[in-house]
Image (tube, rainbow, N blue to C red; front, side, top):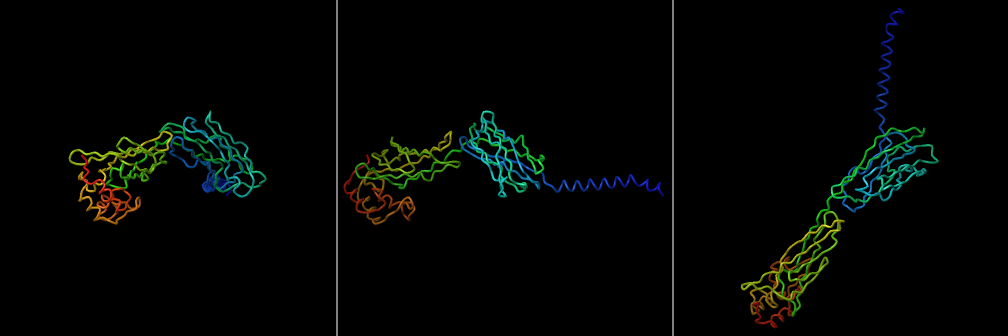
Length: 344
């Protein structure tokens, strides 16, 4: 009998060891590893822009009492500006002490160390340990990794907690070009040097997909220029080619606010007739007066409502000889004053 019992001892020992290993495996599997990570993981930033990353700690079921790290970056691509304490180690209302908070743009690193004080418990919830602000300074396409190193995370027993590091990166993105969008309130305009007729230009429909528009430059096609989102211009001449009018070729150029500014230009035509010419045949006569008489009393209110937005608005636009967006006696006076004038 004794011999039989001794025969089973090795099997019993092996069985007990297997059970122990299984229990240990279950315990290890059930406990999440602590993590320290850079958030967001990857960013595309334009040169000159300021951006921030959070250094986030996830205890993974343990209790974190203190943390230190070194965050290494490429100083030719980004420049560290500030490193600000987060709320991770004080999330339960207890106090903490920042031991080290240093930046070095010559060597390309920021260092941080913080521990809880006056506390007998660690932190078990995820949170931001610190926030680091950078300025992008590299060329388009340049990449800088934001690598965590020298990470030490301690618990209540002053032991080092094993943790996983998740690094980040930043890429200098290409500055996208703005989009110029020009609107002329009136499709039909007249020379305004003797009988005032302003042509109104609006560039507020322009936009920059990744920033703001810094400047608007208008070329009116007659050798004159102006700036601003909106502007007005009085044409003192017209273009007659022998059989009809040629428009002025105008443009709007917008420039964005990038460190390396991008520009975009929109080209458009501006129709300008002689004063009093409503139908554009080059002569001021009864036909023009009839158009004004037919459209008498009509009005529009740009930029919300231009003549082109109204039913049969083209003829009202033609009849509005002074571009005040009302068809009335002032337009008829221009015809009477310029009677029988021609464009040639």
